[in-house]
Length: 405
Ligand SMILES: Nc1nc2c(c(=O)[nH]1)N[C@H]1C(S)=C(S)[C@@H](COP(=O)(O)OP(=O)(O)OC[C@H]3O[C@@H](n4cnc5c(N)ncnc54)[C@H](O)[C@@H]3O)O[C@H]1N2
Ligand code: MOO
Image (cartoon, rainbow, N blue to C red; front, side):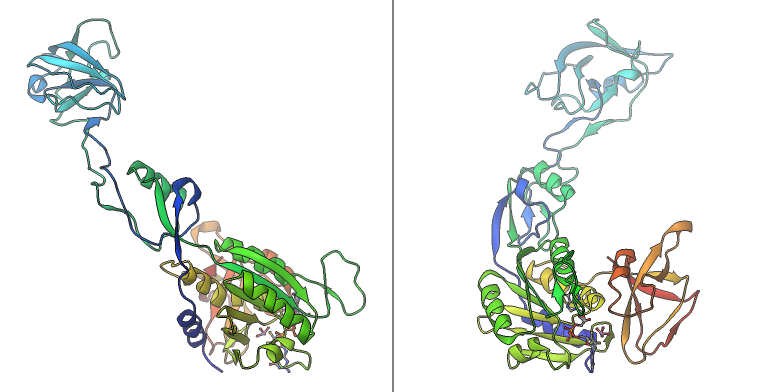
């Protein structure tokens, strides 16, 4: 048996970031940035007012107070968007709105509330009741970011916040990684479409639903979904179709030691089938098809598929996307209800997470224990608790790391 880390290292050494492409900002949500993006101008773009009020020369109002107010002549009006830069002589002020450019001659803003009346008037004069600090309410150019500074860093997943920062810095397009296209193939003669009447021995096919959803949640694209029986020719044909349209093929089922485990048979010599010291997910196949497309053969049990995706496939997809940080972070949680774990293998236990009282507490999500066939429990799982290989029982009160998904 090899460790999770050994198998993951092999996977991550094999897959590589996909080529990049340039996308307009509006189409880049959820994409991963391939190159740092530099701002085209400062944020703020120019010195401007942070308040609706009066742009003044600070020295003119340095002594203003309610007992000794200062009267200034209002010589200009500057709404946001105005290109004007009115000159201000000593004793003069300009009415100015939030976001409007600060006149070159002014250095301080007096909010309208700090003037007599507390609001706008038609008077050509304004009476200032308070001495503002020098530079008060002036939003300086480049206080946040200077032109040429890095706004977004390569490897980041682009959220609405990233795109807004880019737009504010005048960026119109971004260089991102092409999203990996994933072909999903479920194998098993027992599998029928969900809802199809079940003959004895048949079960609803659910792994492709799981994998397609997980692929989409990882910002990759589902290129195709197929279910094939345990038949070598049918699988070869499906692999041939998949290889042409996908950057990655993910199979489920048929990697154990069963007499009808065709994935192992068809991919023998192409992929390595290994036993990984984990539960679920012990039998794992991974390699590269003749045409160069990487392929995963995941163990067929649904919880094994879910865990294998988190531990191996998701990091591979994130590497193809060029993402920084491909491993899901873990958080500590307190065990509310314990369970037994198999010896010698690290366990990834689907757990329901409770956030009440500020601390995370966890209980098994699968009613029947840790069985990898207990697909119903996936609906109750918020994450996977990671139990060290040398632990054989998890007790209430234990603290475990959890991958929240
Ligand atoms: N003698 C041994 N038997 C098994 C071993 C072993 O070491 N020695 N390992 C067990 C472990 S652990 C796992 S995990 C499974 C993996 O088996 P396969 O990858 O060959 O998967 P299958 O046998 O095809 O299926 C396993 C199980 O999952 C169900 N399944 C498969 N595909 C789907 C699907 N698309 N949707 C829903 N359910 C699916 C299938 O019906 C089986 O019940 O092997 C153990 N056996
Ligand atoms: O390791 Mo298997 O994946 O127990 O279900």
